[in-house]
Image (cartoon, rainbow, N blue to C red; front, side, top):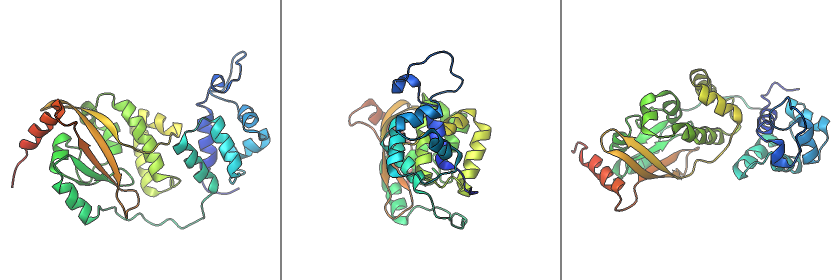
Length: 274
């Protein structure tokens, strides 16, 4: 046995509990004592022995073949992002001495670009910290400020939640994106600190984190209920910042000629000049 966290076992167990027998064609007879699939059902559907699957969940075997992992991904109904995450977990990690995380900063050129853009824009770091932001983004939400953390504000700040109708659903995507961003480095001190704080303060975050959902953070349409200009419908684009470890340039833009474009222009006109 190893003292390394059993990430693979925790992941397949969490995903197993989210798949119903009906989804995989298993008839339900009587009362089931466990949520989702039983271990032996997963093993049968994946074409492996029940004992071997138990060893995977318990961490007694941490390096299954790619074929086994792909079979588990099929049974657990994982999408492309989640399957890639499962394969990374199964590949194992070399033991390394954990170094103190270096403070993230946005590249100077990218920070200058953000300041010059005529649209709300910011740079998010690997841990969803705001590393650079322009004035129009801060006018959109005061929580868009350097040093803020998007995950913390989404789950703990009522003022931020009030800006976003259905923030709980958006929060689920954000948690899945955060797990994808940090990958297998869940023993990173910054990750431990942030996840621990949010798990204690937000039951909603704690439930979402326990699901082990994984998804890439892609562009999406966003609705913002702004206290000054009313409801805005904006497109959010997310672009990877080259030469960095997971930084993302986030830009919000309205459809041309839309009511939201007029409202965003009104918000921009109220910004101090000079």
